[in-house]
Image (cartoon, rainbow over all chains, first blue to last red; front, side, top):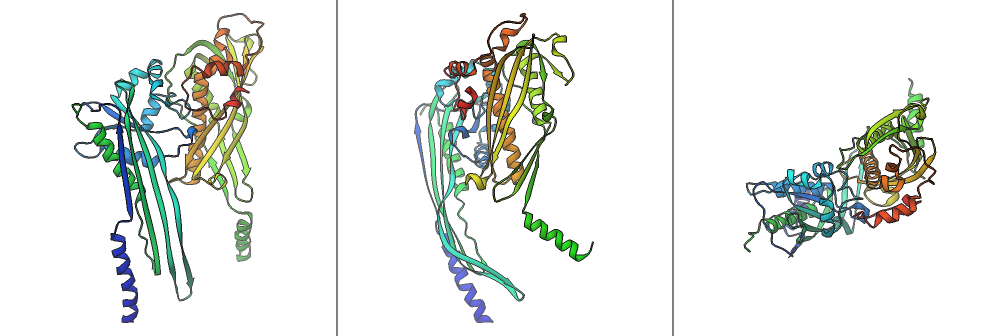
Amino acid sequence: MKQAKRLIKAPVFALMILSSTACVTSTVQDARTGLTGINEGESVVIMAKSYHLGNETEMKYIRCIEDNLARGSKGLRVIPHDEFIDSLFPWFEPRTAPAETKNLAKLMDRPGVADKIAEQGIRYIIWLDGDTDRVAGGGSLSCAAGPGGGGCFGFAWWQNDADYDASVWDLEGLESAGTVSADVSGTSFMPALVIPLPFIARTQSKACKTLADQLHSFIVQDESV
Amino acid sequence: MNRTALLGILLAGLISGCGSNVTLKAPTIPEPLLEQIPMSIGLRMPENFENFVHEEKVYGREEWSINLGRSNAAFFEQLFGHMFADVTVLGPNDDPQLLPLDALIEPSIDAFEFSTPDQSKTDAFAVWIRYRLRVYDREGKLVSNWPVSAYGKSLTTKMNSSDALERAAILAMRDAAALMIMKFDNVTRISALADQPGTESEPADASQTDEEEDTEVQTTALEGSQDEAG
């Protein structure tokens, strides 16, 4: 019995060590095209690029970026994107949303648009593009159950890539302030010796945290820089 | 109920496969930012707008029943209520020529289609709705016949299938609303009917007016725009 316990403990311990090693790699970049900065009372809104253009940014990713940007004492004032879209209906629907900054001037001339944006203090619109995809996977894991009990045996792995780009539009100058991108890759494992032990790489969460932190730095950078 | 009957019901359920029923709540269209058209219009909706049910068997898979209820009726009442200064919803027996209306609009639904994640090999439900808007002048003459194609898509993540499909349908309705707000007057020339006696003009050619408008409107994309122009 003791020997059996030892047999199970050894690989579990080894896998726990393995899981503590880096399974997620990330790259974050930004390209600035204008000065940024944000004043008291000004806010940002996070939007997904239109699905009419094939974009598939997940709703939960947008909410994650919103939460991370707003978090903490130095958090930004974030207007929830659905509230923003409703308040400016129909000009930020997937069909009608401006695709380029050159369309902003015309948008601002539409009845009530500039007033609604000013009312909410929106200084920046951040457009997200990208998604998280499973790019590879393998292994084999099977489970069986019988009258005496059940269990799983095998090993499975998969790799997720989270690639997101954020375009920052400055509504003060009606121009682009630049872009920030995060590229995160994570490999998850699931070995099973009777009990499956999932070692999940939080690829999307990492991409969210990384991009939100970089966006925060990008926006609050002193205007003197 | 005896055991055999219970077993029979369970077996029948297994053989027939799963069915999904989705009931759509009437959507709320946010108050749009637009210049209202100063007209008095009549709105006559088809009978099926009060209880629209779409049933479809996805080939080799499950059966879907999507009950839109009176969502379409509520949608057009709200939308035109925002777009026009005065809207009178007509019953089936009301004669529009006896009412002080500038124009009559008759929406209808040509097609309702959807795709499931299994079909599209994505994580999303998609809904396409093709409405048709017929506009009549006060003499009862058809002045415009405009097909409006709308599209909505919603990812299934953290939602059950019903929620995602419902969300996709609401997004399709909002898409239709956005298109109508942007182009209604340009395509149908309805504002020309305000306070004017019946004219001899030909029905508005939607394809020409769409092209003109496309150069002005800052749309991101017009998926299915060829249909709209049709």
